[in-house]
Length: 226
Image 1 (cartoon, rainbow, N blue to C red):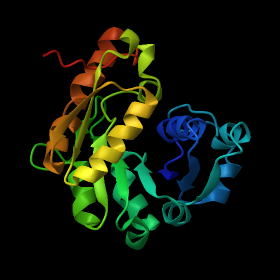
Image 2: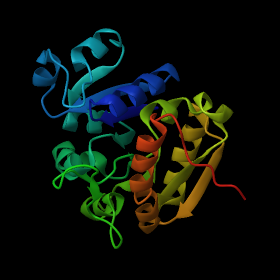
Image 3: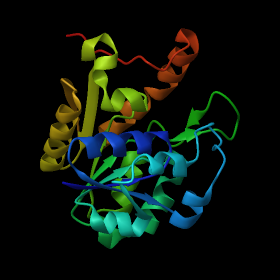
């Protein structure tokens, strides 16, 4: 499958590399490819410059948000929550129309300092805002409740015995995402329901952040025991 990954941070890089290794044709989208590749220092999170990663992953193409979305049969929103709508607008409604749009973002608001709060929350979600802004896309929320390493290698914790969620209005789109999750090694995939259920998945992030602080590592995940 041709897959577009929007976002060049750690999540985007990790997903791009893993999906490419599975045999998919991957292109990474960014606002300004030239500027992104020219950066020589780490980003605000301390992540090494994208150019270093790309030098080791030259089989993965890099283009603008619009070029990537146009090329992809499936589009992954791996931008930060606050920048998701702007990035998807740059990708273009026409380039997203009819396509599965896997949203792994979280609406973390750092404006009041640490720890961040969620915005939107309770009565809305990032995934719902994406779906309402791009009604012809088939939005599925998933993978936002774990770190990037676990997204692509669930076996690194508890032998992979933990849970991942999917939310979305389109049953076929959720099936496509579920198959992708299974290919990555996920076994306990829980369909929460329509796109409004993404509110619950996103609201797990405040708990996740506090667990990270308490445990001293992001290598953990939720397991729904039933």
